[in-house]
Image (cartoon, rainbow, N blue to C red):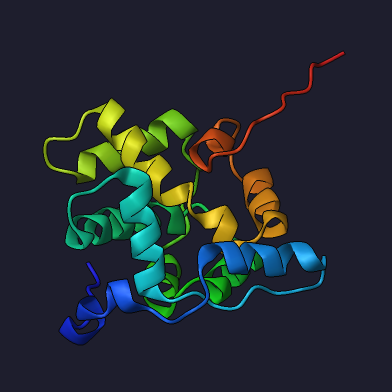
Length: 170
């Protein structure tokens, strides 16, 4: 597991980097606009708030576990772009994973994360996965989020905090 330096952890709440809302606004301004790379501390703060974790350390632990699990499921150009749009620490977590041979379904993915968290249940793991993945669209942009979701099996959109419209077979 990757951890940040003590100096980085001590400044997490004093980050001067653009906030998630500002990055999302930049993404909405133009289809070709690339959001600026967010700060690790800003990502952890967003996850901490989303997941209502008591400490930044707990948010960091969950973030690392979920991003490692996600790293093997995103492939190709989307994987490269995801790593480029995330903080360096998160990019290393994504890039260090070997691509899976068969993508897990969303419930299997949650179960796999639950297996990595001591004392987790499927319900608590679902919360943890949603807390991390739900922060990503504002950081990476809607276009990349949509491209990633097209790669993944049905059901992941909800984990990213998105509605998933299913089309019926004729």
